Amino acid sequence: MQSSQNRILTTHAGSLPRSEELVALQTTRFRGEPVDPNALAAAIESSTAEVIRRQLECGIDIGNNGEHPRESFFTYVQHRMSGFGGRSHRPGFRDMAKYPGWLRLKLPGYTGGVNLTAAPQAVSEVTYADRGPLDEELAQFSRLLRGARDHFTETFVTAPSPGIIAAAMQNVHYASIEDYIEALGAALAIEYRAITAAGHVLQLDCPDLAMERHTYFADADDATFLRFIDTVLAAIDRALEGIPRDQVRMHVCWGNYNGPHDEDVPLATILPSLVNARVGALMLSMANPRHAHEYRLLTADVMPQNMIVVAGVIDTTTNYVEHPQVVADRIIQVAQTLGDPARIIAGTDCGFDTAAGFRDVAEDVVWAKLDALVEGAAIASRALFGARSAA
Image (tube, rainbow, N blue to C red; front, side):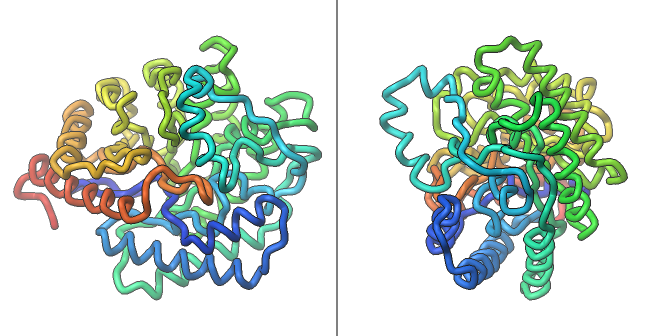
């Protein structure tokens, strides 16, 4: 994993706008309705090629395939793993239930595409049954990268935490959530190893390590939730066996939706657990109004010396386009708190297209935001590195 040696590198959290054709096909497939596999493959190919081109055009340093071969950041596992069927009944988010006016305003837009609150259940033993889609995704990404005119400084591919699957894809088979997490970790290890073996940084998507405090564990206490975090991190550690720490970054967030978020667990509560993860970088939300102040916690005595901070400096739930100077100021604040700008990478709070049809930000605004990210990182680089700053 590269670090910001002479300038602040830029990246994002993974999901980027899909084409409308791809959204329609993936949503139809998620609902269990038939789709033409050739049409789906062609839509994935063209949409992925376009999203790679757009990232390079913006100047993103560390890019990916936009997650376009997948219907969402975690429910896609139903097409690769055995054991899933039926329909889950996801607990409501506590902050959403608290504000019925918000629910009336926003909820219809969040359930019009791939509905993450109605994912399949674990109805039998979960195993990684079909590597075909995984191998096809990685081969396609490599092929499209070779055909691109420009090149990323580095590439990454995402994969979910066993904890987010366990929390959102209801368990009706295993004796306990701990057993379910263990089975998921063993299955996901295949995906983790394939991604890193292909030469990409593995991004672990772990919203469960923050978001589930006000969802699955809404009626529990902090101690119970922290035990869940420890269980998930232990399963991830086992799944990452043999993978170098510096090939893995971990994304933690409180849910990628434009809601109140006043029931979010504070970063101060969970950070002592997160820093124990066997990863080379921790990616955190720092741009949204609820968590923008928490960069103050990322001090040199708290953050392990070998851990990079991927700072979310772009809000992925609002159509405001951040001014580049605002972006630069956010980067500089994190760098000054941590004490070493080389350990900072500038990113986004979360993805922009977490599931097909689930989007708060208009597509053209997304690219304007990423332009602002790159421009802001350049401003911060000049302030932090001075003459050493490279274009």
